[in-house]
Length: 380
Ligand SMILES: [Zn+2]
Image (tube, helix red, strand yellow):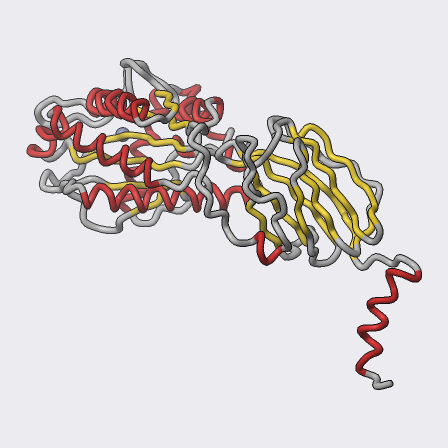
């Protein structure tokens, strides 16, 4: 017998003779992700292989060649998971996830490398299904890593939180003709709500009248309403009265350019009107998220903002010169809900001030935003 056969024979025989698992489960935890998704994280000592099955009301994760340890899963509130049990089935560990719903959509999965004090992590994100789960078995890691191409069931209503900037004692910027930002953005927000409702979305306004709201309150409304997408509407002012066009922003701790930085400062300054409001800045909801979750929210926001900018341009809405999507530390975007801040145009420009006041231009803006929301892939 040649030496080359020994390795394979040895590997094959070890589990039969005496079960010596190569892998072990170090921890299991759950969490909530944007889009009403539940996240299940399984930490293992070495890179896991796995398969998934979906009996009614359950998700079973099978990890071959893995020992079940004494583990108490860390359970977060608000997930689709009732309880988690473990069993040893031959050389495989089975994680039995008891669901609050009958079925789930095929989970998105990823395996993360150890990072600092973490182990290998098998991450599964999933949303509630309609009962007709397409795939009963989602294969091994390679197959399951492919993003699900099945679209969400029509019955799932996505929630859009629309934020009309400023309000009450805070007028926002004011055009030469006297047009106030708070008035224009509220009119657009209301029109947007009507059209999104008609398109089958579930919508909430952070304010529906001329009231002052702190920025942190707006962000927390997005959280409370479990928004899938947050859109904050504003209009801009520039020292140069010639400056025109819309611009779109996502949250970043570092501004993408000097102008974006100044804009965030002026939008954030709304809270300086209210001393109490400014102290709320320390309660940064997004900081409570793990780096991985922050990354996911930022990516989804970026994707929405880029597609929104594209739809605006394709709709013939004039764009402000410069980058398509910019970034700055806007307080109103500090939440776990993906979203963007849209500066609809410049009130400091005489012709754009007229446009922003007009019903027809407001409708044009609303139609473009509705299209951008429809284009957005809520399931990624
Ligand atoms: Zn504003």
